Length: 125
Ligand code: FES
Image (cartoon, rainbow, N blue to C red; front, side):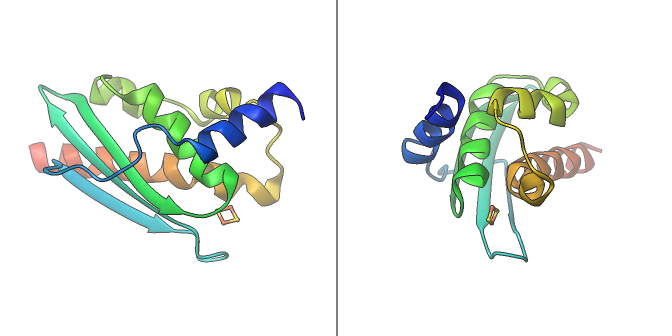
């Protein structure tokens, strides 16, 4: 197994920031309708920065590992920086070629994060 696949397996087996938060500022969830894989994401936001992040879910290694990798990446970032985090940056961190069939897996958590930020911005208005 190459190093990059090991990284995905490591995040899948030992997900970072796994578990729900007690008092999140926002909670979003989503599922991939094709397979039923699920993710729920809690964020605590203070001074427009992501102070705490937690997630729970079930599903394939890529969807769960991508969420774990993403939480490590955006924790403590400003909402603006988290919002500008791109799909390409996520793909780079995943380190494996994502086939068209697995794009939905890789982006399940990414889309959820973007949804949370849009809702947070809406709340702030
Ligand atoms: Fe369901 Fe990957 S197979 S999200």
